[in-house]
Length: 258
Image 1 (cartoon, rainbow, N blue to C red):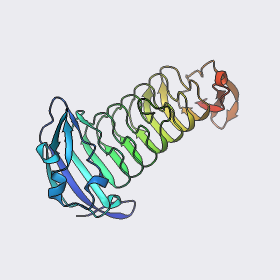
Image 2: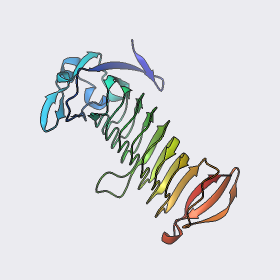
Image 3: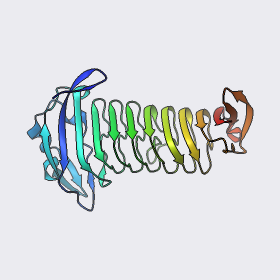
């Protein structure tokens, strides 16, 4: 039966995990872009990586369902996923991926469109350098969410990431645009080197906004104290407003619930 995303009819391919080697699997070809226009047999033979070894998707997944002609109309459901599955949805431009279980590193990295929904927890480097689309994590997530990829300064430039529980460190490092929402708490170095976009947190236990030049960080915790390198500039509705990082002549804003 076709599914709908944003009003579009979608065809669905289901991948049921058979096993995952201890080295993990890098599954950058599990995207609507890679599946679209193929038949299910071709999808089964797409290359993924088990350590340094090239293998086919069907070596580790049972593949069923129906492909679509375009990525925007392709849905992929992964059943029995765990944290050893890495790089799901890398670079995807449209469609939907639904993960039943946990995921590993680099989910949705360089993503430009579409939607990824994870029912469990996620590893680190989620949505790094993404420029569009939406990622929803129902559980906890690791560090470097929406941040820059290794060796780069610029992070996420568009799209939306929602984590319904807690996250690790260095969320939104280098954020240029887009939105990161954490309904739980975050650790240190949120929004470092941020030049745009919005980060919204329920709480944080460490440094925030270091070297921030623009953008907004909202903290929904009345007990939070803005760092010394931000100056209070007034109030806006239910928030106190702080501007900085003054050490870098930044014009970023931290909004703290009052």
